[in-house]
Image (cartoon, rainbow, N blue to C red; front, side):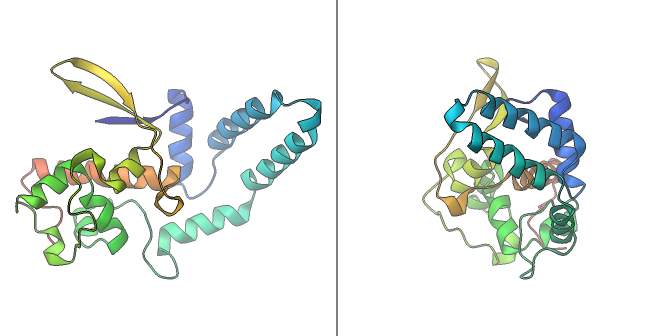
Length: 204
């Protein structure tokens, strides 16, 4: 599976991801979003010009805010005050000792969820609780939240094609770009561990 942001060139995608995981908004990320803000506001009528100006001003404050950068670095380095946030898990040990929030998203991956239901995976030694026992595959809420707005290249008997999911979720189920890529990276490592016959959900 290859996942990318829609409506962004490969160069933009690289800049966005680099900015996300550096702990702040990179110049490339800011430029990408600035272009989209300009595109969205340039078509406004004179009546909406004041609102457009306010949108641009608000964006510039966010894009240049060192306070936002520091907050992101703090969250990624220490979690949150409660210590349970969506963040990339980049080793077998980190995945196998995931916090409840990340356990949920790890187990919402269709392949991992299927193997857990078949008893192939330990499911974090019974620390995982399935909140959607009747929902399987790509219909699980966590999977839909991660893949919302992400284009996915699929290879099957029909050939290679791209699909993009746009889903309607409750506000508390929605993820931002940073969270989506954190989970995508965690899934990628979990799948690599599976290929080596390693159970990523068994604590080490």
